[in-house]
Amino acid sequence: KNGVPPYVYLDAALPGVALGIIGGRIGNLMNGSDTVGRLTDWAIGYTWPTWATGFPGICTSTGQLAWGFCSGEVVRGPVHLTQIYGAVIGLVLLGLVFYWWRQKRPAGWAFWNFVLWYSVLRSLVEEPFRLNPLWWPVYLNEKAGIGFFTATQLVSIPLIVLAVYMLYRMGRSGEEAGA
Image (cartoon, rainbow, N blue to C red; front, side):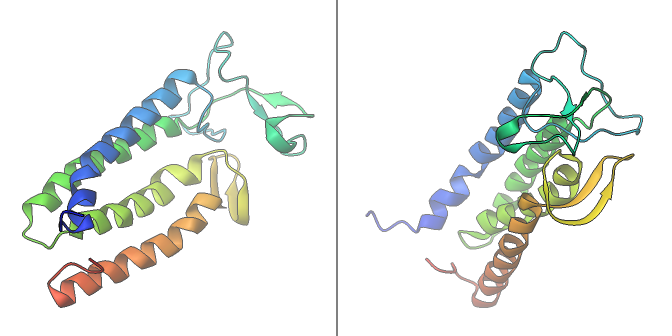
């Protein structure tokens, strides 16, 4: 409406998005039930106390029903604190946003870098350890609590390809891509 390219607004919103990721994951940690990690035998695993009603335990794979209901055994034990992994990703992205802003690049450069690196970091640092169904069960290590590929990881693939394409396009043209 005012002749300002949309990428200017998208770039300006990125610190708020990164802070939202951090705040959301801290909230997930505080309620103890969202973004639950897989059981693990690693030393970094955390066992929620029995009084922590937000985390009742993990349903065995044979007893998991739709809509979060469990017909099997509920297991308590050390889990990955994926909420903290996600908050660290948000903190890293917040620092990267300020780095990208300092570069003399066209509007949108920071936005597409954010899309790229959020997709990569979340797919590699947080998602393998989250207790999400494996849409494409390529790898599952139940002792370590690692699994590939969740829905988020699969959706990240086209996002990464699109972000790389847009950054390439912006780098070649030296101007805003798609504005």
